[in-house]
Image (cartoon, rainbow, N blue to C red; front, side, top):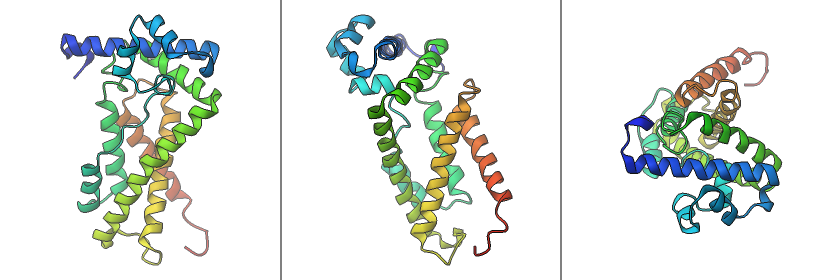
Length: 225
C-alpha cells in the first residue's frame, strides 16, 4: 500500500512519526546525542512526551532507527522445517520484503520521500559519531543473526541432502551461511546509499546474487577444501 492509499488515521500516524524523526535527527546531529533531550525533541516536533512514547521506545530509536525488523519465531521455524533449494536467498528475500512493507522503513510508504532520505543520511552520521549507538546497533544485528543461525542449523539437520560440506559439523556450515547473510545485508546497506531509490528487494537480492557469484570466482586454489 502506497502512502497515498492509506486511511487518514494511518497517514497522520506516519506523518507524526516522520516529523519526530526529522526534528530529532536534526537536533542530535547539530548538538550531539547526549546534548539533546526527549523533551526538546517533543517541543521541536510539536507533540507531548506521552505521544512520543506512542511512536518510539527511546531517544536511541529516533537517532538510529529500529534496524531490520526481527524475523518472527514462526517464520524462523518455517525456514527450519521447510525444504529450500537456496535457504540463503529465501531468508534474504523475507528480510527484503519485510523492509519494503514496513511503513516505518519503506520509502514507498513514507509520507515524504525526501525527508525520509534526509533522516536516513543523518542517522548514518549520528551512528558513526556515537559509539554507544554503534555498539547497540551491532548487538541488535547479532541478536537478529542468532535467530537465523538457529533456523539454518535446524534446516540442515532436517534436510541433510542440502548440505554442501559433509566433513564438518552442520553447526559450522550454518555459521558460514549466517555470516554470508550478514555480509550481504551489510554490503547491500552500503550500496543502497549510492542508489537509495531502489527497493530493498531489488537491492538485497541483487547484492546477494553478485556477492555469491563473486565468491564463487575465488573458490579455487585454496588447497584443502
